Structure formats: C-alpha cells, structure tokens
Amino acid sequence: MQQTFEIVVIGGGPAGIAAAVAASQSSKRVAVLDDNPRVGGQIWRGGPGLAQPKAAARWFYQLETANVRVFNGARVIHADASARTLQAETTREIFPIGYQNLILATGARELFLPFPGWTLPNVMGAGGFQALVKSGLPIAGKRVVVAGTGPLLLAVAAYLCDHGANVARICEQASSSSLAAFALRMLAFPGKLREALSLRYKSRFAKYATQSWPVSAHGKISLESITISESGRLREIPCDYLACAFHLIPNTELPRMLGCHLNQEAFVETDELQQTLHQGIYCAGEPTGIGGVELSTIEGRIAGHAAANDKRAAAKLFPARARYRKLAAAMKQAFRLRPELATLAKPDTFLCRCEDVTLHQVRQHNSWKSAKLHTRCGMGPCQGRICGAAANFLFGWNIESARPPVFPARCESLAAISSLTSSLTTETEPPQFHGGFQ
Image (cartoon, rainbow, N blue to C red; front, side, top):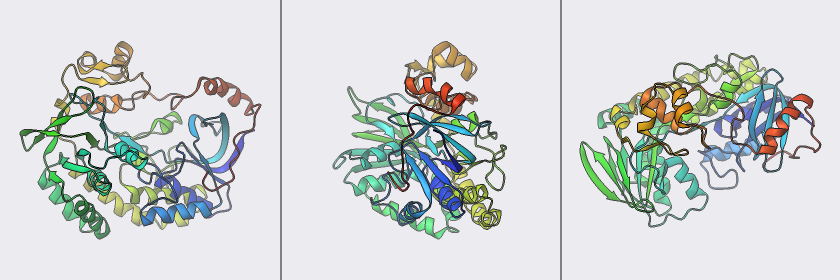
C-alpha cells in the first residue's frame, strides 16, 4: 500500500536533514528518502555514531530525536507531480510514497574534465576518493596528488594526511591573486577562515601550488605518475592516486522530471521561500546553487518551515541566507575554471568512458542530442552524468534530457511502475521502517 506523508524530503544530506528537522517542528507527518545506507550525504558520509564535525553531530541528533520517518537505501526512480506520488526502489522492492509538499535536496556530484589517462584506475574524483577512504580503503603511505579547484582540495588533503597518506602536491588551478582576493572576502567569515587555516596546517607537508593542474596521467595497468602544468612548466610526479575536484554539478534530474524550471546557470529556480514554480515543491541546497554546507542547511531550514506553512520562521533565516550567498558568489568568482582546462583532452581521449566515445567522435556534432544519437555518448550506465557535464564545459552544449527512471533500476522495478501508478498498490507491503536511523 502507498504510504502518504504531508512533507517528503528527497535527500539525506545537510540540506535534507535541516529541512526535515525544521518541518518536524510542526505537527505534520514528515519523511526523508535517501539512497545511501546512512544519512549524511557526501560531506557527512558515515552517518551518526561515527567521527563527524560538531555541526554534523548536532544535526544527526536533532534528526534522530525528531518525529521523522527515515527511509534509508531508498532511491527515487520515478515521480509524478500531478498525482503527487513517488516510486522508490530498495534492494528488495519498489514502493509508492504519496506527499502533499515535496522538498528536493538532491545534492551535487563532482565535475570530471577529460585529459589523457583520466580513465586509468586510481584516477578518481576527490570526493569519491575520500568516500572510499572513509569506507575503509587503506591509504597509509600511499602517494597522492590532489588537484582541481576550490576549498574541497584542502579538506580532502587534510583528511588524507590524517589517515597517513603521503600527499605530494595540492594543485590549485586558480591564480594566487584570485586566492588572495578570496581570502580578503573570507575575513567577514572568521569561522570559515579558521577552518581553512586548520585544514592547511593539517596538510602543511604537501606543497600547495597555484596555477597548477593535471595534464596527463600515466601507467600500464593503473596510475603510476601524472604530468602537471605548474605556472607554465610541465612536471612529472610519481603517485599511486590522483584525486581531482573540478567543482560540483547539481543533481537536477529529478527536479527537471518534475517540471521545475532551471535558470541560465542550470540551477533550480526558487522563490524566497525556496519554492519552485510548482506549488508545493521546494528545493534546497546545491541544486539551487553551489554554496557549501552552511548555505545548504539554511536553505533546507527555510524550505522545511515553508513546507510546514511557518513562513515567519522561514523569514527569520533570510538574512543568514543572503550572507552566505555572498560568500558563495565570491567563491565562484575566485575559483572560476580557466579556459586552458578545455584544451587538455586529445582527439583520442575518451569523453564518454561508459561507451568508449572519443573527443574526436563527439566533435563531429553540433549538439548534445546529435552526439548521443550518432555516437551513444551519454547512453551508458551513468546516463550522461559525467560526460554530459564535461561536454557542457567543453562545447557549451545544453544537456536537456531528463526522463525516468532517474537512476538505473532493476527490470522488475520498471515493470512495476505502471501498475503502481495506476493502482498505487502492490501484492507485498512496502518495507517497514520505524523512524530514526536504520
């Protein structure tokens, strides 16, 4: 049978947790659906009970003690805005969830930029690599280069150093003048500045190089070394892992499928209460603009209060949101990707690693749709989440496709969707969760 809640939050990261906690302060029934075994998202991966920043621990406690039903390991693969229903898949089955108000806190993923050797084993996204280490990947004594741009580089490098890795270099593509200007803006956020200085101290034995980025990766079976460009000079560095972080891309597939409008920067457009153009559908966190954990939690709280019809509580958070949006704008300006990064890939470099489609093959076309139809670029398991974002950066193409299922799903789940949407019943009961963390 369909379970119905007055407020459903999709995503258990900082924005989703904050939204659920805020919404639960009303008497309304609230549920959180998250596709990970534990809530926390990428930044707070691991969940409650494990070592976490104090801010994360506070949010975990508030969620655990709130009147919120948490569905872990439940991935939304289909949504019907007109019927106000979702279909979520677990490892066992698919089940329907009904809602009155919906809060989308779907987070973001890493932007991968292709260069020769980027598909070698042990070349990873920085956040993904950190998640593997948190899951038990041994890195003590391993040589690691962290490259890309933004504050995430320091956070990942510090974490790796804490776990015994030999971080040989932190390659930041931004210039030293851009970083200096950003540091001045950070003076208005002393807490964030102290955090950055602490992370740099933890990674102090790693050289921090500005105007530096990976040019190519080398290795016969897996990564053995990388060539970097450092202030215009090429340098080869032996390493066991390369962790790259070239910004974040918002996860907007579900909002688009629900008909939410995206602005020119491909972020979900919302009003002051975080409500989209669809009445009763709210969005918070990275899908509305990349701004960091503090901004995400503030937006989540606003969305939660608004969905619970407590506009006064939501309005009290407007000044804090405006303040952190200024920081997000400064960060965007300081770490803007340089055009040289669009020239790294060679004609035979794979752009789509799922379907082995090279840059040369894609360049024969003038749109994402044409490239997909003729080369199968973006039609592999990731459904264009990796190569589509790269194509947008390289060619400026609009990656407009969004269709169900939102994520890869089991055939039995796809077969069940039509019957679920017509009858909203199944022969078996949906999984039983009893609140708190499963």
